[in-house]
Image 1 (cartoon, rainbow, N blue to C red):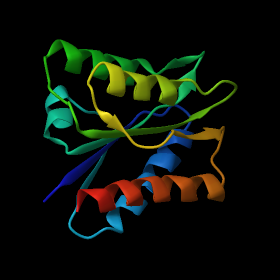
Image 2 (image 1 turned 135 degrees about the horizontal axis):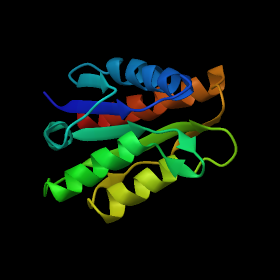
Image 3 (image 1 turned 120 degrees about the horizontal axis):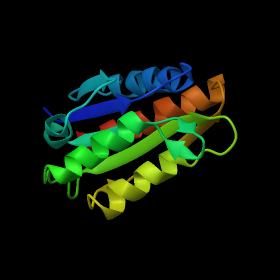
Length: 144
């Protein structure tokens, strides 16, 4: 059964709300195993067919946990080539982190990126949560 990993980090809970909506959308598709986690090791990323990363933006950067996990994965020589990757996240004033994640997934790991990241300025409203659900549902459907 194909699997979809949703790996996220949050400080205020806003990106976590988005992560749970991403999980809801993916779980609507039968035949896909969905894992939502706050912590991931390189092996977890390697074992996933698709990786969706939720990352908040702090001071124009991604959170250190996500940055360190991606760096550790690269240093481990983990091959993620041609897997599908996506990103989402909340921010206060700038919102670069999800875009930075997509750039790393595409350029460093040679992953296929789906769509532009779903972004929320502070707490996500229902429209933004629906975009999170739609993003993951669409990705999960492509896995089946």
